[in-house]
Length: 471
Image (cartoon, rainbow, N blue to C red; front, side):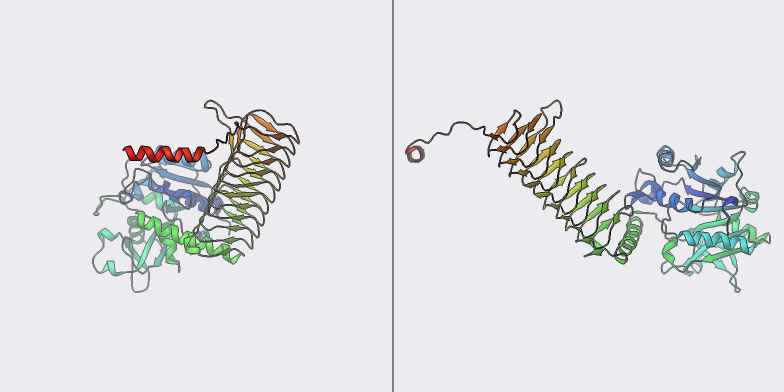
């Protein structure tokens, strides 16, 4: 059924949510690297509706800016005073010259677990049944905090009561309101401004329209989803964590079903934007974020952090941090190395323990075994960087570049003072400070003169003993 041309969507995102205890708008709190609002807008965009409206209020500038930058097709409507869900919809109604279509789907901005197929079934159910409104409900094991669905003996909805206004008997009901509705546009707008605030919160509730429509002889029905998690909203940090855990479990299960091994899925944080090929192994306690792709037969972890990085096939990364980089095939990285943004490695590269690589290119087969800093550097193929070597790329005013040709051997504890170029096949002796270019196939040595004083160690120790005796 193609209902999109007659459907508008309204997302209610104006509230502060006092229980979050935050100055950040609730819908901008993040789940797996994206704001809650991202999931809601991404979801309803799949319906391809005539309009998408987001009602903003608390910190409206922050929310509107996010929408503008990420979902420019969405229209924002301001609710200056947060007087309830029905009052928020009134702000939509008062927009002049809008063609809303025959149906309006209304969702809270904090229910990211709802499924797109459930929304489609809700709209289809409303249309096919000829109802004035259809609401998603579910049976939940713990209904605390939810509005209750009140039905007659024939299972017809009589009304929806908010928990704060429910009687003790009504609070025992486990069928709850998801706060997701599909309304007949005409019925909604004809009644939206007739409701009052005769409730504990002194707010204008959308649920009051349900009761009003029933009294007016309009048909009201519900679509009961069997997965109660879909109706789970977020009102505090505990629920935020619960929803994130649910979404993380689904992501990890999907990856494992598609050929990824996750050794301890409960300890691994993997965002939905991450792409992982089959036969990859993710060891425990890894954090993989952003626009990251991991090629087949690679192993990540344990204790890795990877963000916005492309990792080739057959690469092994152990207990390291990699940000904004491109890592080639069959690399071996770590443990305890820090690969900073702008780093690009070729195939068969080794970056050993306790290294830091910043905005550098390392070509095929080169090695930075351990304890080295490489910054703003081009390293050719077949290069070996000795332990504790540093490219000195910053003079206090500007960054300069180091270029190291193919098949260069750099001895341990070498300082390369940029800008400097080391020619192909050159050898740098250990302990050297190189501040001039080295020609190809040259041997560069820069050291102070070594002096060996005969019996100097004996005289030194004797002086120490004499001094200690006098003291």
